[in-house]
Image 1 (cartoon, rainbow, N blue to C red):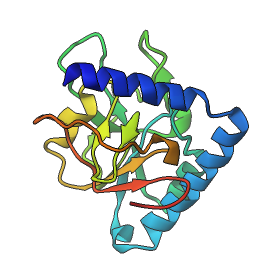
Image 2: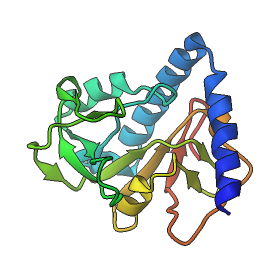
Image 3: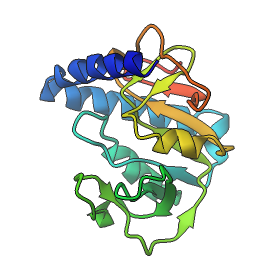
Length: 187
């Protein structure tokens, strides 16, 4: 199954790399609008904290969402992990998007280690590919799957419609999400 996942990761990366900067930006804005509608026009509107992510080059950027969350006094937390320690452990630390820093060799913006750790009510989860059964394939590090295995809150995948694939191969340790939010709709 690992070979199958490697092939899917490569295919998903190829799809993401073909999205033009203009389309990337417009699709990210649509995803953010759909996410805001989902978060504030549904049963999830009573949340006090949210775990977000600092977008890598090919992941949807959610900058406008951060502004909306701040105005509504919702705590924003970013994932923190040390990629040099191969324990696949991750937690969420409160942080303003402007205070993220590059503290690792992988150019991933992280909150300062001293920031308060919380367990958010809702998580926004990136990935390389998703299926309509809420399966997710990430980058292969296992950090999100490990965290999600004990997370009890709402799990929202955030992706471009192009990232929806027929089927994600799922192993015992792989975790599903509750909903998938794209630029077109929610699944």
